[in-house]
Length: 225
Ligand code: DC
Image (spheres, rainbow, N blue to C red):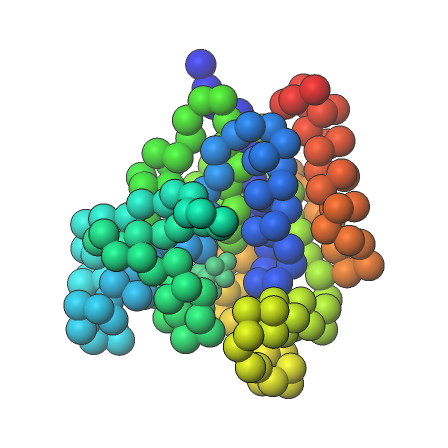
């Protein structure tokens, strides 16, 4: 029997991560944070001293790296080769590295099986850029979440401030625009909504409102009660 899958795709700062966590919790389903896998490939490459243009080396790491996702005392825990890298993969530099390695077809191909292995009963919420278009084209429900670039930069700014890291709003806006452009125009698996995706613009909505909307869509499709 096939495992039901909800895909949540969209640009940085659209609220995909939070939405995916809320819905996975509501449904009691597994969660795949595919962006974390690209971040881990970038970080693993740095730790091994790979060149910034070593595509094949990064593709091999994508298959070989030992990754564990777990839950720590309060929040998520990500281990790379046994080391806690939960915070290290969330820096702006790690985001830039992730976006660079994510543009390379051999790296994307190497991560396919790893991502598909997350589809386990009773179901999976898969968060990323190409979950509905490439990795899980057969998903029962596909959501594409957007928000204006201005609102996304502001959300990221507030997130960083909460964590105590300083950031400039204008630098973040520039960074987000550059990353959007790179992620949307790359040749392989660009950031576009699947033809059968439900597109939700979260610009004027709270995360609770977006979650309620997606939970209702899933209920209408018989994914949960
Ligand atoms: O969602 P995130 O910021 O953690 O993703 C980091 C980078 O990885 C982002 O620049 C786009 C890339 N990515 C991707 O190409 N495909 C995915 N399924 C997820 C992330």
